[in-house]
Amino acid sequence: MNIRVEIATASSTAATKATLAPLRPRQPSIKEKPSTSNLTVARQNLNTKPAKMENDKGEIVDLYVPRKCSATNRIIKANDHASVQLSVGKVDENGRYTGENQTYALCGFIRARGESDDSFNRLTQRDGYLKNVWAASSQR
Image (tube, rainbow, N blue to C red; front, side):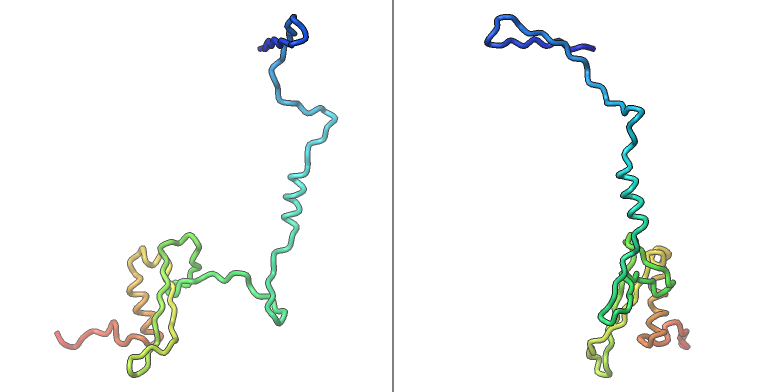
């Protein structure tokens, strides 16, 4: 497909005519080498060492410590939107909050099975917050 273009100039009365060929993508010649800049960057990224974090003493510490489910000990992933974290406050003999708390994390797997209440009761009984949750009553 050719395109015909006529250009009229002010200095001449005759119109200049030109024929333009359609644009085609440039084909690399056989002598040209393919660009390796992207491959080099990818290779450099693979060879870099992972970042390490050090504390004031110079000891290497982890960059990220993921939460774990208190009931199943599974790692709670970032996309587990059904997971919850519950904090139970410690109280003294008079029932006043002491400023300390115990935190429990429950993953979405436990919640989806409907066992979060049983797991929470078991964990709090283990830590001494509840007593005799599953004890059968003697009165019937």
